[in-house]
Length: 253
Image 1 (cartoon, rainbow, N blue to C red):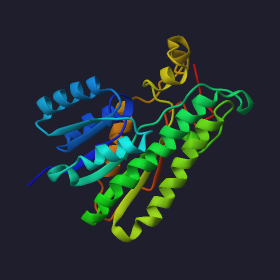
Image 2: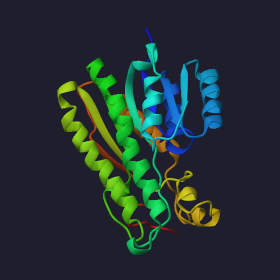
Image 3: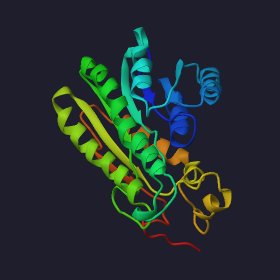
């Protein structure tokens, strides 16, 4: 009997990498995607050697539909038997009022967080429907629930993830496919470093004065949601550090 397969976007760092490690430890075979080929290959070798599972790495940019289509169409045999799609890839770019935002930053966030999620979902969901069961897990954010100053476009993209998750759940109901949206709060990953374009001090300051979430925390939550009995679906889950109430309020020492 072959291992179940999870398809993970944005697997080279942060939540995606931590989820890859968690599911590999749980006996899943993995399809890992990301833009950084070398990181994907390093992760593939490590997970296969450590856990004795199979890993397929696909390096491409989810902002490009043709690249997504080419990657998914390359799947054959065992690798088409996907059980879980984890739409993890996403990012924030800077913080600025709407009238001062960089258009290129907006396009990067919209193309990654919304369009990339849609592209991959459009291509993988038919494989789940063929099986007659499966699970789509979308990584949102507390920014899907609250809007904060300077984060308008990022928050809008994550609100879209929430809305798309609801729509998927309705559309896929007749096919026995679960849809879960997980909304993490502040987590110390590469997220802030990307948002502030490599400014390490700015990125570090985000997490000063409290203990943030770690990627492994979210991986544990994703795994929990994915391993519930067939009749149980966790629809929408917000996860924050104890020191965070929502996207706006923190208690810092």
